[in-house]
Structures are given as C-alpha cells and as structure tokens.
Amino acid sequence: MSLTKAERTVILSMWDKISAQADAIGTEALERLFASYPQTKTYFPHLDLRPGSAHLRVHGAKVVAALGDAVKSIDNIAGALAKLSELHAYILRVDPVNFKLLSHCLLVTVASHFPADFTADAHTAWDKFLSIVSCVLTEKYR
Amino acid sequence: MVLSPADKTNIKTTWDKLGGHAGEYGGEALERTFTSFPTTKTYFPHFDLSPGSAQVKAHGKKVADALTTAVAHMDDLPKALSALSDLHAYKLRVDPVNFKLLSHCLLVTLACHHPAEFTPAVHASLDKFFSTVSTVLTSKYR
Figure (tube, rainbow over the protein chains, first blue to last red):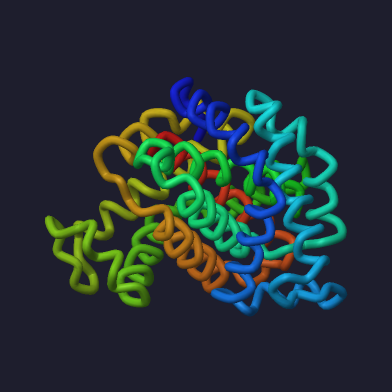
C-alpha cells in the first residue's frame, strides 16, 4: 500500500493546520484512546493519564511531532521513523493492535477539528498514512 | 517485517517435508477456516462447503500451489504474487481480517500433520511467511 500523488497533496495541505494545533490534537487523541480503550493505559504506568494532565500534553505533542517528521519525509517514512521503529521493536513493544486504536482516535480528533477538510478522500488519505506509519513502527518486531 | 535467512531456511525445509501433501493440507485448512470462522463462508456462495466437498479440496490445492510458488520466490514475493494480488484487490476483495484466520488454520493444519517439525522457531518463521504473503495479497486494495 502506498500513497497516491493526490493523497500526498491532501496530507501536506492539511498538515499546517494540524501542526498549528499539535498539542491540542495529540492530547485529545490520547485522551480519547485511554477513555474508549482503557487497556491501552497499561503501556503508561509511569504517566499521569487523567484528562488535563501535563504528562498527557507532553506525550501528545511528541506523537504529533513524530507524525510531522513522517509528513516531512512522506516519500521515505521508513527512513524518517527508523529510530522510533527500533524504540517500539526493542523497548516499547506496543502490541500492533493498539496502533489501529490510536490511528482511529487521531482520525476522529482531526475530523472533529477540521470537519470541512475531512472529506471521504481526505479520510482515506489520512487512514492510509497512519497505516503506513503503524507498519513502519512495528516492522522490526520480529 | 522481513524474512531473515533463518526464516527462509525454516520455510523451505518445512515446505519440502510436506511431501506432496500440500494440496491436501490446503483443503483441510479451508475446512477448518469455514468451520471455526463461519463468516468466511460468505466469500464462497458458489461453492458446496459441506465436509468433504470436492470444490473445497480443489480450492485448497489452488491455495497450496500459490503458497508453493511463494516459497520458491521468497526474495521477490510482490512480483511472484502480482497477479494474485490484483485478483484479490480488484475482484475478490477478501477483507484483510480473513487472511489472519486462514493463516492460523494453515498453521494448525501443519502443526497437526508435522508435529516434530513444528518447533517454536519454525512456527514463528511460517507465521511471518503467511503474514508477508497476506500483506502482498492485500497491498493493492487501496
């Protein structure tokens, strides 16, 4: 699966708006994740995950920043996220199922912040993009 | 996820040991899939799916032959399975979830018939192999 030219354009054109609200979007996506899928909290015993917590904001910002790196190198996401890929493979070991859950929450968050932009085509582009990122982050597991 | 040299050796060695029974095992894996996961039957409204069905046996042989081809071309699966990939993308459109179910049943079938070969390491290699084939077959969906 790879992104078509049109899909790349959609992602790049929406990215500025998204990164302008990076903290809010990252935090909200994580809040949604932990609320809808409480089992995902098990990966963060060391963080305060209550809504509004500083930890959530910091971690949310990190996640969106990493997505930004992938967007900037959209033709070579594997290269851009190589270190993160190793982190997930050798240290974090987040079960791949959870990437779909976080991707879903990111899509819901982006959709709710930018409803006019989040057309069916944009939705597809972002879903494919997050799928590719998830693949990259889990490809060194075994 | 990449097949290591050790994985490839495990896969080739195991497949050679199947001794011409691959077709039979393909049929059994399909029967197991339809029995354990009845939703998978929806893709075969044109088949007789009762136990012992000749159509299921024939289809099992088709699946096994494709896997045998894949084993012979592990270094270039996208090219070797390109036609099958197109078929699944544009005609069959089997939901990707189902590839995991069939892969599971293939593993169970092989484990039943070749318990001595089916060590944890071989199990892991075969699981990676079926995952990789599944990814290729769903890579052109969108």
